[in-house]
Length: 95
Image 1 (tube, rainbow, N blue to C red):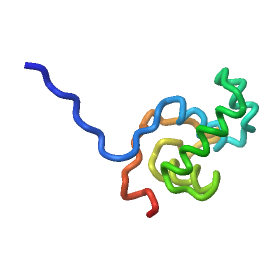
Image 2: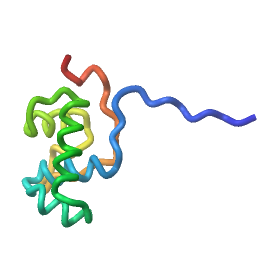
Image 3: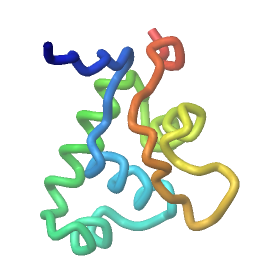
Image 4: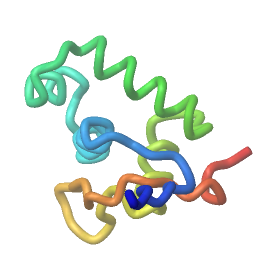
């Protein structure tokens, strides 16, 4: 009998999305993040925009604050880094 993986409740971010957010949260430009991740600047902008929509964040600072509260980005060190926890509880996402 095969066990099913537990379903994660909430919004799940990919490791790449967390890396993009960590870079932006640490003050990197889209261009710097793009070079580091071997992506185009427009791809970084696309991902940031999609995350803003998905998480109902009106701007990038609100997006960064949300993922810090959710525990996806560290709040106790600089530079900001991804923690490895990639699920945002739906109760943290504004209506």
